[in-house]
Length: 462
Image 1 (cartoon, one colour):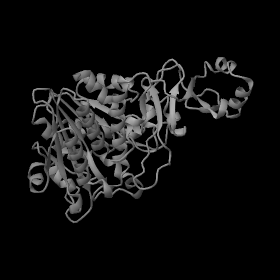
Image 2: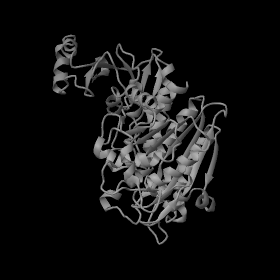
Image 3: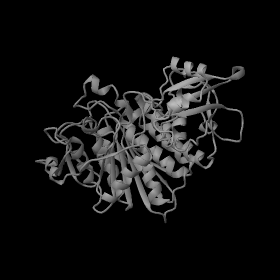
Image 4: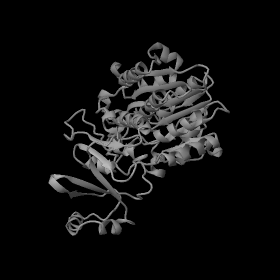
C-alpha cells in the first residue's frame, strides 16, 4: 500500500514560519469579528463564513501573507475531526493553530489528506504540515492514521488486485516489518483442517485459491489475544447469486480482514505486551461446477455440522473455522471484525458497527473507548431465545435462518457456537465503507470500529 509518508505532515513547533489558522465557534464568532478591521469583516461576510463546524475562510495579510479561520463545534474542546476540513482544503504549506493546541484533532489533520490514487492521478496537492507543541502525541497519531490508511487502501482496491493471495502478501509485509511469524494453510491441508473455509473458496480460480492466514507475534508469556478478520475478497453470493446491485461493492467484503490486519499492525508497532494471534480466512465466494450448494451439510473444524440454507451467508462459515482455530490456543480474549450482515446496516446505518459480546465488562470497555476515540460502536444483544432459529432438521446448525428476523443477531449467535464458554469475545459487524463523504472521511473504504477496539486493548493491556 502506497501513500505519502505521514511523518512529514506533523512536526514539532520550534517557532518556524507558518500560516496561522484561527479557530472560531458559533458562540464566539461575534466577539472574534469585533476584533477584525472592517475590511476583514467584509471579506469574511463575502465568503459566507458564520463559524459553523468545518467551514473555512481566508483572510489576506500584509505583503502577500494570508491566514485562515476554521469553524469548529467548540473552541475549548477540539475533537478528532475538527481540523480535517482544513487539511483537505488548504493549499500545500506549513500551518500553526492560533492560541490552541491541536490535541486529538491531529488525527483528523492526517486523515484529511488521504487519497486513493492507485489507478488515477491524485489531486496534485502537496503536503499540508501542522506544527504542534505536543511532540509525544505525534507518533501515536501517525500509527493510527497509517492503520486507517491501510484499511481504506485495501477496501478500495478491486477484487482482481485484492484476492486471497494479496491478503497473504499484505500479511507477509506486516509480519516482516515487525518480526512476526506467518503461517498459511491452503490446498489439501485446508480441505481436511478447515473444511468450511475450503468449501466456500473452492470454486474460485487457482489465482484466488482459499487459505487461512495466521500471524503470531509477542512474548509467549504475555496474555494471548486472538484477532480474526473475515477475508471474503469478493462475494458473488455463490449459487444463491446476488443481484447486480448487491454485487457492485462486494470488493469490500474483505473489510473485516483489513481491520484485523490494521489492528495487528497497531498492536505490534506500539509493542503492546500481548501474545498476538491474527487469523484471516481468505476466500472468494465464486460460482463454478464445484461450488458448494444450498442444502449441503458441511462439517466444521470444531466438529459441528452446518446445513447450508444459503450460500450467500458464507462469511460466518469461514469465520467459524477461524474462531475454532483461535480457541485451540486458549486466548484470554477473541476479537473479530466482519462485514457480515445487511441486517446490521438496516438497523444501524453505515456509521455504527453492530457490536456483540459475551462479556459485559468487555463490551462496556469497547463502547467507552469508542466514545473517547470518536469511533462509536453500538451494542446489540446475543438473545439466547433466537438460538432456535439456527436449528436444522439434519445438522447441528443452519447457517441462514428463514424469515429474515434478527439477521445480525442470529449471525452473531452462530459465531458464538465456535467460541469457548468463558472466553471473552467481541464481534464487530462493521460496514467498512462510507457511502457519502465527511471531512476527513472520503467516500469509499474506511475503518469503522478500529480505533475503538485499539483504545480498549490499550486500556486493558498497557
